Structure formats: structure tokens, C-alpha cells
Length: 331
Figure 1 (cartoon, rainbow, N blue to C red):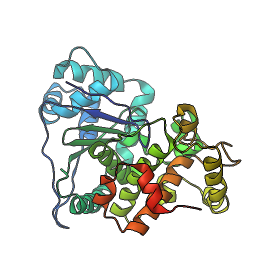
Figure 2: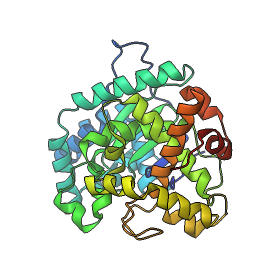
Figure 3: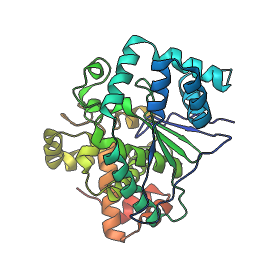
């Protein structure tokens, strides 16, 4: 049975069950390298060549990816590999999408830098969560759909969502704050965030602001610890102007939330506005995108400073009010 879930928060994430599992990886030290399986290249080669032998080789080598990608895009009734392949070939033959795919293959011809970052990140996560299975890592092109696909011990990222802020096609579909996060330097971070979200799924009330804040703050904090070379401002897609805004207005925004009793109120519409991927004037003029995520990270960071909690201990605390209480967060 396939479980399909469009995650409402950090990433566009699809979680799926799969009857067959790829080989997972378990980094135990600096010499254990994460290798990205280039499903994107193999599928592109089939599309370009229309070679039946290459198609058969693709179906033999990547049955899980074909199944998962097909279900995420089409959820087809006919799940045979030959039917799945034909669906995907037709889908990627659309001229705009084919041009996008061609650009992705050129931009991501080499991914050694990403593999190195993933090796660092997953080695750290495995050291903190020894029971965590490290997935087999793939890359795909979704046509500007799901960022991350997760199935059993498989993790794949859609490289066409990371072509750079100025990529021409993006301007017709994405606003500036969204494009700020569609960069190569965030690929490894989003791989890790997607896997963490599948390993530690959200169990709170998505209508409650504090629940969502703390959950997102936990995921961001773990990614930052796993990839020490990246900054939170980069993860958030913030400009220097956004960072300056927080320096001046963090206390103002927190005061507004407390005075309006929004932290634990089950208000879906109000809560959702704190996580919009766009600049807006709610609830304070000039607020950057995703103010809820930033505040959640501040709370989690303060909690760890006060409690000296390990990552494992942090993830074991399920009550966001306990996280807030211990953090003594008062900007």
C-alpha cells in the first residue's frame, strides 16, 4: 500500500511505502561516502535516445524510482514498469519540460560537492542517532513538482528545483523568497531535511502555531548541526535586509504573538500565515517570509543552550510548551 503525503511545512515532500527496497548506506566514519544514484541521467538518456535496450536497462536498475516518481506525478492505474516508463517519456517530451531537463543535466553533470556534504551530514546524524538508517540517495527531475521523494530506505531530490535564483523559467512560477532557496548550495540541506522529516514525522496539531514553530525549529537546528558550513539565513532564503529586520523586530513580533494569544490557539488560517513563503505585512510591517520557522528555531536554539540537550534528547521531547518553558525565550 502506498502512502502519499504532501508535507505542509518545510519542503514539498512525498512519503511512500514501497514493496522493494534499494540498498541503504550507513556511514560509520569519514571514509564512508554517500553516492548519489543518477536516475535523472539514466532516464534522460532513455528519453533522448528512444532506445528500447536502454529502457529495459533503466527498468532493471531503477524499478523503485520509476514506481515512486510515477505515483508522485500521475498515480497511474497501470503500475507495470513498461507503462510507467511510457508515461514518463511522454511527460518529459513536453518542450518546456524537456528544455528544463536538458538544463538540469548540464548544471548537475557533476555532484561531487553535494555527495561530500551529504557524507558529512549523514555521518553526523548517524553519530547522534545510531539506529537511524541511512538511505540510498537518488536524484530526479519532477518538472517543478515535489522537492523530495522518500520511500522506505530511498531518498531522492528533484534537481530542477535548484537551478539558481535567476533561472528564467522560475520567474513565471515562483516569487523572490521562494527563488532565494532554489540554489545548489541548499541541495544537501534539503536532502537531509527531507530524511529527518520522514524519520521524525510531525505529530502535533498543525493548526497550532507553537507546535509548528517548534517542529520546524528542530528540523532546521539538526540540519545546521549536520552541515556546519551553512547559515540559517541561507536555509531560510533571507537577504541581508531580512536579517536586519529580525535584529530590529524579533521582540516586537514575539510580543504581538503573546498579546494576541496565538501560540496555542487552534487557528489554522492565522497559523498558516506565519509560514507563508512570501514577504508580507502580517503581523508586523515588512516581515520576511516564514516568520514562524525563524522564531521556532530561536526557541529550539535557546532550549538547547539552557538544557544542553543532545539532538536525540531534543527529538524525544514531544511537548512544544516544555521546549518553550525551558528555553526561557524572551526576545
